[in-house]
Length: 122
Image (cartoon, rainbow, N blue to C red; front, top):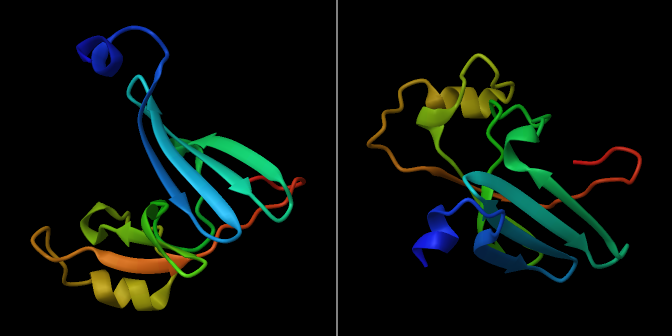
């Protein structure tokens, strides 16, 4: 197990699966790099990307909310407000919430769908 977690091989480590009616998300690590794979069941398309390469267009400060569970057809994600780059936050409601937040405060839960097009991957 030590070799799997800390070794030099490019093995996939620590897989987490989340599934809705339309999507399947896999969070996984290769060495110390974090990846996300998504299968859109309705289009039968897949995409894999390194977490650090996600470009946030939602205005949440460059921190894609990682899935921690599912509710109906939505994924449940966590935004840790103390990790946000407040200069990048575009969403006015999120700006208000994060103005007086500390590391001891609870994370913010969000519900979201994942969609992408073949022409414009996530």
